[in-house]
Amino acid sequence: MAILARLGAFAGRGEAAAAAAAGEAPAVGDDLRVTLAMKPETATQLDPASLNGGGVSSHIFEGGLDRLTANGPLLRRTDVLILEVDPASAADLDALEQFATTAGARIPVVAAAHHLTLAAARRLMRSSIADVLPIPFTQEEWTQALDSARGKLAQVRTGGGPARSGNIVAVQGALGGMGTSMIATQLAQVWAETKKVLLIDLDVQRGNAALYLNLKPRLSIADLIEADDRLDIEFLNMVIERHQSGVSVISAPTDMTPMDAVTPEFIERLLDVCTQNFDVVVLDLPGVWMDWTALAIQKSDLMLLVSQLTVSGIQQARRQLDVAEANNLGDRARVVLNRMVPGLFGRYDVSEAEGVLRSSVHGAIANDYPTVSAALDEGRSLKQIKLKSKVEKDIRQLAAQLADELATLGATA
Ligand SMILES: Nc1ncnc2c1ncn2[C@@H]1O[C@H](COP(=O)(O)OP(=O)(O)O)[C@@H](O)[C@H]1O
Ligand SMILES: [Mg+2]
Image (cartoon, rainbow, N blue to C red; front, side):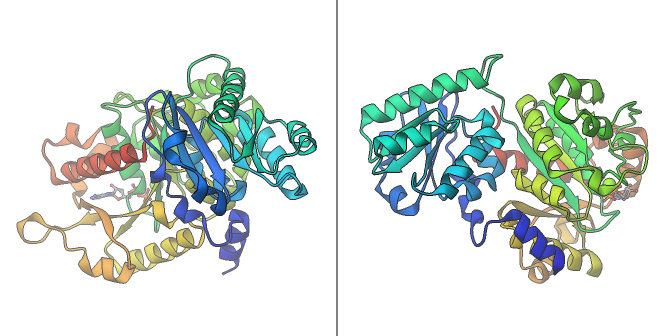
């Protein structure tokens, strides 16, 4: 209970964020992706049709900064943020300044307000924002605000080109030994056939993803933690090892590392750099809930919860789902049952598990110890060990299903 309360406080978002369904964001090519974070009354007055077109793709989000920052996937798909504020509210102005100078430093912000007086506009312009926009606004005012934001965007994105905005898939086991690292490493290899994939082993005390890929990295996530604010793509490239499949890997430390050596600030920075440089970032997470693991899931598009069809496996999966739901992260959780034994006609029976879990089971993976253990021992893909095994077919099906889901979320550049 204590950890729930603490996680709730950490997440700091009362009833809501779930709705923010990242899926509402439009799928776009090179359009400027504008998110309008508005109070509900204002949102209903906006005409979405007038906000799109001419290289702009807008998404209306009901809620303020606290709800928006809790929605990592949407934030990653935002080039410009139009944020409704009350210029008379010190709390609104503080939050705006805080956002504009930290997480949002890469996202130009236009402050929108009702009854915008000259004094209020001046006050707003003192914070680090791109422009102000009155509510309601004319087409011309809208275009002007976007022009200012584009100018600011060009400044913050020196180096040119829109930042790649990869997807993050977190993989977490309900218990140890469920096959989390097997699934993370094998999914990464399948996706690497068509995408630029990075696997990060964040299981800092038990991580063995590098081992499962037969890599012997000199450097690890611990070196990235030490890099602190020098952490950028060049630093990342020094730590990354490449697997023969093309997967880039950041391994867990070889020394026993305290769980709290990883901080939410580090995760924030790490995942930002990684999604700017990869199509898909796969996280092999430890099975514990800490502030930073919750943040990692908060920033993920999907979270795979890996378990098995055993009493303890299902009970613990339910517990994990409870925590995810209490933190408004239930919408992105997908349950995967590993080491399944097919019944008649090769089908898996997951109905009982679904009943107890009160949740659907999104993937089932065959039990095949000889094939899996050979793949993990030799650091190879299941296909390289045995052609057409059921376990490989199941992993591919899961990979395809998740890729479809990610595509409808409208991310990968
Ligand atoms: N589908 C499977 N069939 C047979 N054995 C498996 C399967 N998935 C994983 N295993 C075995 O289970 C063990 C634990 O897997 P691992 O991925 O390290 O679990 P976790 O990361 O959840 O602790 C490994 O020895 C692995 O060979
Ligand atoms: Mg593991």
